[in-house]
Length: 630
Image (cartoon, rainbow, N blue to C red; front, side, top):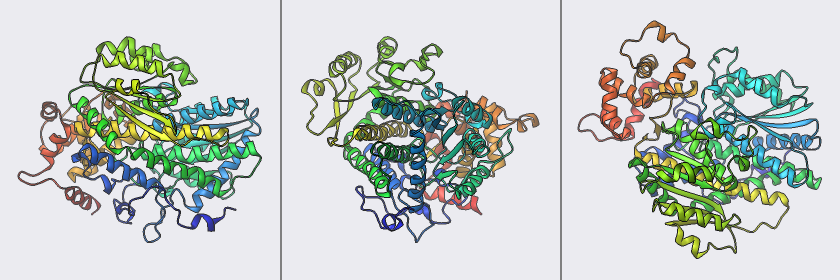
C-alpha cells in the first residue's frame, strides 16, 4: 500500500498556489460540475489588459497543484493520497504490459484535445521505446480519426458505437490491453462506449478513466442511440475498482480560466498525470525497481517547476498576447511555425480555436517541420483532404506566405538543438512579409541564442531549462516539460488574443461552435446564465438561431440533438444571435443583423444585457445564477 503518511503531509510547493477558491464551497454553482463552473479568479478577464490576462491564467494554472482543504468540500486533488494510490496501481499495470509487448498493448483514447494528447503521448512513448531498441507498446484513438488531430471533428464524440468499433480495430489480436480513456468532464459518449466495452471484457481489458470531475458529477443524460449514461458507466467502474480491475483518476483541478474550455487546465493536468505515471513505469522497468509514491511525486513536482519557469516570462507572454489581439482585431491571422513536438503543440492549439471561439480554420494555424513524417500519425499524409490539412513548413512557404500581411503574427517555436540555419533562413523570408515575427526558444543552461537569431525576430522569449544528467527517461521528461511550457504559452496567446478581440463575455465562451451535444447543452446553459430564462425558452431561442426561423415547427423541436448540432456546426455566431433574441424579443433576422453590425461580439452582448445607465459588474452574473438556482 502507498505510504499515506508521506503523501498526506502538506507538500512544499515550488509555485505559489492561490488561496482555496470560492468554487470549492458547497453551494457555488451547485448545478454544474467542476469542469463547467466559472472560475472566480477570471470573472472579469474579458476586460483585462494583456498583462492581467496572463497573470489570471497563471493563477488558474497554479490551481492544478493546489492541495485539499478539509474545511471546504472534500474534492480530491492532484497530490491526494487516493489519487497517488490509483496512479501507483495503474503504473504497475503499465509495467506488466511493457514486459509483454508482443501480446499486450496500452491504448490512449480521447475526443478533441484529449484525443490529440492521446496521439502525442502514444507516439512519444513509442519513440522512447524505439530508442531503447524495443517494440512499440502504445496506440492511440481519437474520435473522428487522424483528421481530428488537425481540425475540429466534434460530432463523433457523441457516438459510443464508433468508440467501440475503433477500440476493436486497434487492439485486434492482443491478449492484454490497458485502456486509458480521457474525458475531462466525464461526459464524452465515445469514451463511455469504450469503457463499457472494457468492463464487459475484463479478461482482456483493464480500463482507466481520466477526468476532472467527481463521479457524482459525470454527465447523467441518456446517450443518444444508447442505453446508458456516462455516470452509470463511471459508477460501474467505481465498483470494479475495488477489485483493482478498473481505475478512475479524477482529481479536481478547479474550473477553467475560460468556463468549460478543457483544452486548458484539463489538457495540462492530463499531460502531467499520464506522463508522470508512464515515465515512472518505464524507469521502474528499466531499473527493475518498484515504483514508490515518492517516485510519482518527484515526477509530478517537476511540472511545478515548469509552471514557475514559464510564467517567469509573463511580460513577454503578455506582449505576444497583445500582438495576437491586434492581429485578430485587424482581421489578421496567427501562424505557429514549430519544430518536432513543439510544432505539434502549435498544431493542437490552433485546431482548438475553431470550436472554442467560433473562428475559421485559417485564423490560427500551426505548421511543423517535415510535415506528416515528423507527426508520425497512423493514417499518414492527409494533405489531399484540403488546405486545412497542409501542415509542413513547405506548405506554409508555398501556399500561405505569399498572402501574409503586416496584420499577421508569426511565432516560431524551437529549441537550440534544432537546425538553426534553417530557422534563420525561414525567418528572414517571413520577415519580408510582416514585422510581427516572434520566437519561443527553449534552451538548456549554458546555451545562448545567437545574435543572428535575436536580430531576425522582433522578440525572442528564451525558456531556460536545467541540464539533464540522469537516465534516458530524463531526456523525455525535459521534452515533455518543454511541451507543457509551450502549451501554456500558446494557450495564453490564442485565448488572450480572442479575449482582446471580444470573443469572451466575463469568462464565458459566447461565440462557441455548437457542434456536439456537450456544446449544445453548454450553449443553453450560457443563455440561461445571462438571461435568467427557463431552459426550455433558452433552447427554443438557440434552435431559432440555428434554423434561422421565428416559428419553430414541432418537427424541428422533436429532432434529435445530433441533427441540430450537424447544422449548427456550419453556422457562425449562433449563441450571440440567440442571446439577442432573448434580450430584445425581436425577430431572428433583426438579431442576426444586430450581431453582424457590431464586429466585437462581447460589446454587443454587453449592451443588451446591461440596463441603460447601469454599470456592468460581475454581480450581474451572480444575480442570474441565484435566480436560476431558486
